[in-house]
Amino acid sequence: MSEIGKRYGRLTVVEKLNKKEFTNSVYLCRCDCGNMKEVSINKLHTGHTKSCECLKHKIRSYRLNGGATNEC
Image 1: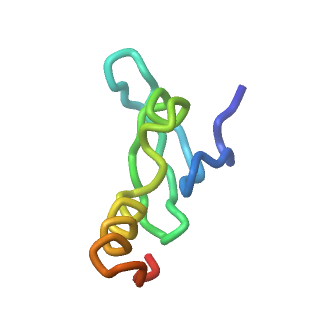
Image 2: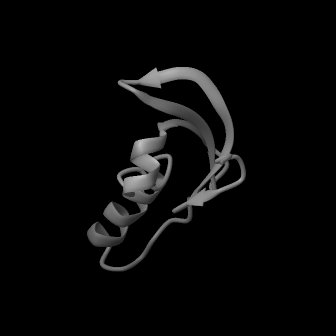
């Protein structure tokens, strides 16, 4: 079953790379903010990785600024 085109959080799988992380396949994903990120399929399936890191920065900014956010 192909992962291409599936969404995981803010990431959309673009292509399967010829790489492995341990025994897991690695995919190239495009984040909603436009950045690209290489992610193992295990991290996508478990929800460990949901964005290119922009989501983490957005949450941190939200907490530090009392609710005001910067769009990624």
